[in-house]
Length: 274
Image (cartoon, rainbow, N blue to C red; front, side, top):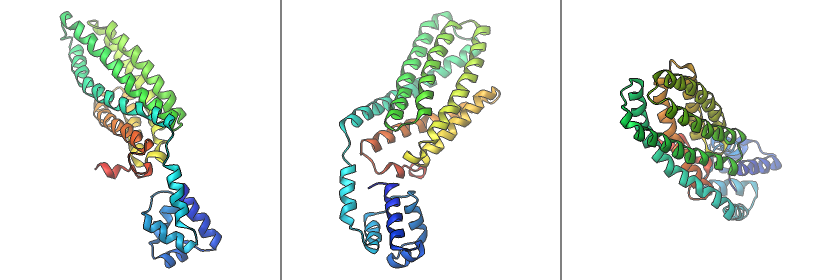
């Protein structure tokens, strides 16, 4: 049995026995704060802690273990869907590296320093960004199907569509400074709004993936606000870079927790990475 079901079960058993949290603490010699966090589903206690609590409450520890064994069986369908998350993670790394090359091209484009001969390379990088970003972000769409999240589901698709249009506009505006700059302003506003929405969706995953999802979502929102302001768009890129790194880690950790290759997703805490 996993959290929050375990905490709820202990809460029900304690109330059935007519015990307060303080009385339970005295009987099993466990810190009251620990009991509170277990019942709230905030932490997954060690086996001996669970056993100690259940013995006091008159519940067979083997029943919890049996439930754990049943819950640990993951359906092939879920594993199949989750497999794409791993693919999206590795493609996301390629996208992340390619984004630095794109940044150099965009910087040159701002100063009108790109020669016409560089056009094929510019176009190739932009198409590469479109494809790799599409696969990477589609990973979050697939995640929203496994762990239902309508905000992430909608925002992921909109981000992919917006990127396709954005790349097409960049290519069209190549060597045309007036058009190119207008395109960048429009993209900043569009992506700013979308990343705010996307961030709100990621925050909702806090119940599944802990505070790491919360921090990732907050950084997405901050990046979106920075892009929308236009003035803070450049500094916002630094926050956005950190956000994308956390995005990659979150996607891979989601894959591990869904396929049972890591501890309970509730333990996916930001402190584990710092």
